[in-house]
Image 1 (cartoon, rainbow, N blue to C red):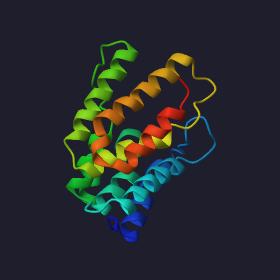
Image 2: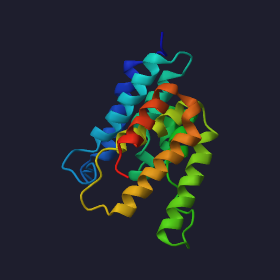
Image 3: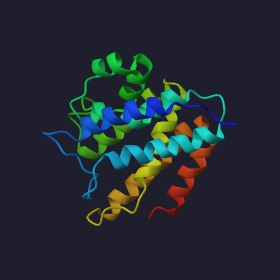
Amino acid sequence: MGSDWSPDVYIKAYRYAATAHWNSEKKQLVPGTDLPYLMHFSMVAMEVIAALAKEPGLDGDLAVHCALLHDTIEDTDTAYDQLVETFGLAVADGVRALSKDDAIGKDLPKQQRKERQMADSLERVRQQPREVWMVKMADRITNLQPPPKHWKPGKISRYREEACQIHQALMGASPYLATRLQEKIDRYPQ
């Protein structure tokens, strides 16, 4: 028996995220495609829901909320306080932990800045409940599709290395997602 989650929670968070990522001013697409961005957070939620079905004792609603909302602070005009008001402190804290901190490494070269931001992100995620860890793993699982054609081999290699770093740091949260992430890493170009 897995962990329960509410379809009503899913619908509320899905509507909120869809509106935030696709509104009259901004029509966010999955990078390198013509697909609306809602495809990305839907796939992240699907990965989390699959894990919840196999792993008992988890807060399914927290995991689903964070999966659907994980990019709202980072990629939209949504503020942390708005998430607190609409979804509560635990969800807002989870989404904030999953969001890149643009202030980290501002004075560093691009690659060093990305490395610092990843280390900071993983540290903040590890301070959250394991349901938030699951979202970070599910996000990378979803993003380990064939790389865009314009990516150079060095970028592909660094992206795979980041996935390994995420796996190493967070695999204790979900055996199911840890296995899925490792399978994706193994199939990703080197």
